[in-house]
Amino acid sequence: MENFAAANLLRRLEPIRIGGFIVGFDPATTSPYVNYATPLPGTTPTEADVAALVGEFTRRGLLLRLEFAPDAAPEVEPALRRAGFGTEAVHEYLVCTPATLTHPAGLPSTRSPCSDAEFTEIDAALTEAFGAEFPAPADGASLLRRTQERGGAVRFVRAEDGACAGAASCSAPAEGTAELAGMGTRPAYRGRGVAAAVTSAPAGVLFERGAEPVWLEPTSDGSRRVYERVGFRPGGTRLYLRLAAPLP
Image (cartoon, rainbow, N blue to C red; front, side, top):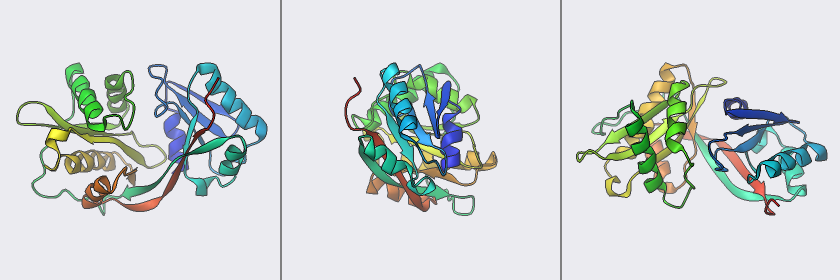
């Protein structure tokens, strides 16, 4: 999983390596959920490595966050906590393989966006779906388009009234796996199978492109039930840390 996380960050527009950390920067947004760092497997960071990491984010005026599976780099968490990092979240991640993926009967059909208008509409729908839970990227439509153009998959459900009911995206394969993220359904369309549809469809696309497994992180018991319904199973734990003190 950490090999994927590092490879995925290297696909950012401005990836850099600092000691045993890979950092992915995207100048199109200041979102800390796009600009963050992850350690390489087995990394034992020095104080100088951590200081350099802090300095790079400070120079750019960005909040410093890290996302990683602690079992893959057990020396990282203690080093970061000594430097003042605190826990943002701990999430269990789920994995799906071609053998476990299911497409329950009766789900709405999904589509792949083709036009700028559709990417913009998906971005607006996801912003509404997430509310204040996750800050929206400044140029989410471009990020979605770039995901699709680079070998990932974006799928959405068109409601009867023509609106985008919900959507999700999956990264291009890296290190034999891919991440499904940004699954969201607008409040007015929840309970209609939209979330299950936009989860299973892109996972199937990525299996066809060689990813095995596809993984994701549920944010609630409700979303977890949706993912388990289409074949996702427990895979491990990921830790999210951020610098406890505000950057100067």
